Image 1 (cartoon, rainbow, N blue to C red):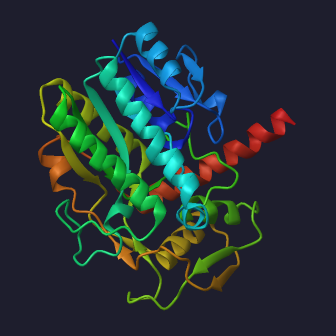
Image 2 (image 1 turned 90 degrees about the vertical axis):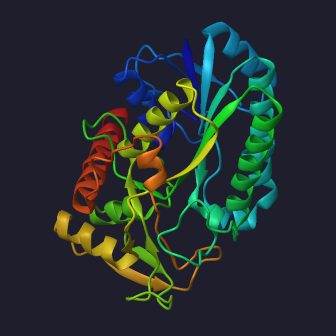
Length: 331
């Protein structure tokens, strides 16, 4: 049987495809390549180029490849963009997910692992955040993901179907073997942007807000290494296949770093003192959000192996250099 990975040519999706292959699974990728890359799909893995909201294409792909589980990544993910284009986010993240879930049920696929987000918590009252924290997303991005969680919950009650929704905190780093990394030129993730500044791909880095109620005034986030996150999906797949009930679980390290902490780490590891510019807060950014990961550890058996900020930064820098070499070759 095969595992359909929507958005499998993107950042987290491509790492999860690698993890599936390493575990002896048979992944199939569905991606419209709007932000993903054909070369990010490993040789021998089927790539279906298309829309995750296309129910006819989904059904055909499930039938042709014998898909018994779906890992759903395909979505828009930029918080400020969601504030400016809420309808685009509700279409891409929510309406199309409804088509995916409906097709899965119709085709007899009983297991879905959903790429959710810590943005469903909004500005949490307690740290670290447990899965029982009130859900108060402050952006259309967070709301669009929460709507899908509700959809999955209701569907699991009505049909022979189970899911795991993994609420990601801030994903960073690259495959330790150098096989994949964050490749989008317009990525907004802090560690990638800082790595680009260190390598001269950007003239500076901006810090959005220095007046948050945190020790240094900048936002605090829980940075999870992407291969550790990919492995959480493998554990979720094993859990569902062994008869596990539907579950929501955080994916983070249970500690955080401020924006300035991260910038200093990138400067330290790279040896480059790049310019930093201070700017006003962005809409939709909570002051601090750090995961409680006990549920993922205790129920899914997840064991992170790359919880080290300097290691994550080294991976990001190495991948940025590799992307530069790839660009030179393609030019």
